[in-house]
Amino acid sequence: MGVISSRLVFEEGMVTYPTKANLDWTGEGTEASPYIITTPQQLIAFGDEVNAGNSFKDQYVALGNDIVHEQHQLGSRGHR
Image 1: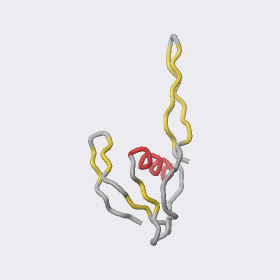
Image 2 (image 1 turned 180 degrees about the vertical axis):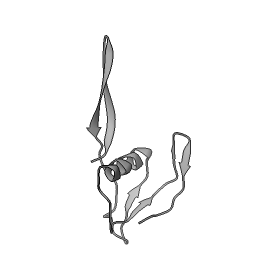
Image 3 (image 1 turned 90 degrees about the horizontal axis):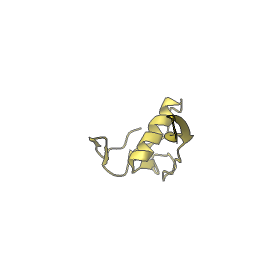
Image 4 (image 1 turned 180 degrees about the horizontal axis):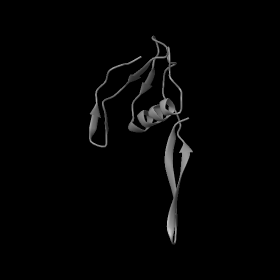
């Protein structure tokens, strides 16, 4: 699953550890019903899934909104 950073703050330092992100996309990953990504968090989780080895081969994913993340805007285009 995707990863979101969490952190614990101690009196003399900080520890950061990964936690699983919720892949709360709509859709079934088919051409007729692609996974729809609508938030920066979902896009990050998708990237984490790809980086973890999930190729999404033969599955369909589309952006449901324009997503602005860290001053980079991504347009609404579906990709396979």
